[in-house]
Length: 374
Ligand SMILES: Cc1cc2nc3c(=O)[nH]c(=O)nc-3n(C[C@H](O)[C@H](O)[C@H](O)COP(=O)(O)OP(=O)(O)OC[C@H]3O[C@@H](n4cnc5c(N)ncnc54)[C@H](O)[C@@H]3O)c2cc1C
Image (tube, rainbow, N blue to C red):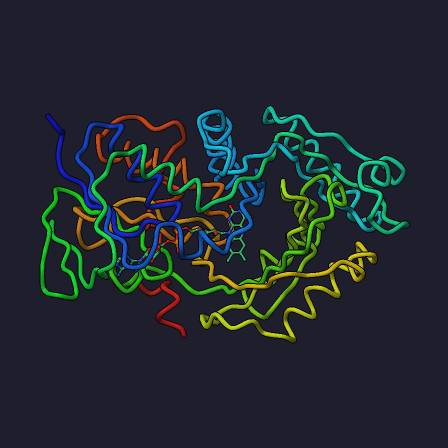
């Protein structure tokens, strides 16, 4: 017999991972999705499964989740395009090489092996990077996945009942209400509606952060690792203004996926030509020959950002029957699996692999919500 009934709202990668984890913990799960499986930010994301070190809490979350992804990898279908491509953090100058050394020490102390590349080694690994770069840090354990297929796989594996096509307009007090007026009851509701989570659970400090991506035609071997400029960290950290950073990913098809841009408070899906041009200029500063490749598609997506860059995972302030799983910003593909694990631990009262406190939505006072200062 099921331990109880859980409704998950949202079938992005986070909702799918939560559904899977709750089902495995013995709950009967229904997933309510307004549009399509993995069609929100999940469809737009780069799928880079990357361990990050902005803070101990971010490291713990990304490290645990990436380990879960690597354990899951052999079970994923081929269409999920899981690849152990590794990341090279590219250092442009001596100052960034200092950051490389610090990163190398930090990861090493925490059990992740990395390799410092000097200028010649970087050029050998990635011949299409421009000359004159200082070097880089190779993190061989980072990987890549195609997120919408991974979301489908997790949902299917969960055995959850899927209720598609009708938006949830309200949730709380053990009930989910649809636009038609129909309702479903549950012991616990997981709000995994991505950017829309803040509408369904008012007061969540979520703000939109739009991003652009571009994919080229097929050029097998042109890029071999996920390449990220160390300046990416400045772009990801900035809390206001628009920013771009060089980020390139080899797809198994031979295509090159190029990012990235960040714009706060912009939610429209239109490609912003000026922002795209700025993003590509930045990429060409690292890989000048990119200018000669043909692009076949550009698109945008919206990240759900929080004030401290960590997601919101756990009970909502006003209603303990609602567990929030949103606010994953640019790391939601990476951190989806650990989010499911944390939600299931909170649900069952069991121990979790990492401490849940840094991610609890209640860490924010209501006055800190973005909504309160525009
Ligand atoms: C350009 C870009 C690049 C990125 N690159 C990476 C990367 O390389 N690595 C990484 O880890 N992350 C990356 N991310 C971040 C990642 O894509 C997101 O953090 C992640 O997809 C969030 O997943 P989610 O399930 O929370 O949200 P979503 O995927 O948006 O899913 C939410 C779902 O809820 C549904 N929904 C919303 N409202 C309702 C409602 N009222 N009723 C029913 N259903 C509803 C939506 O239709 C949607 O399907 C990137 C994001 C962008 C935009």
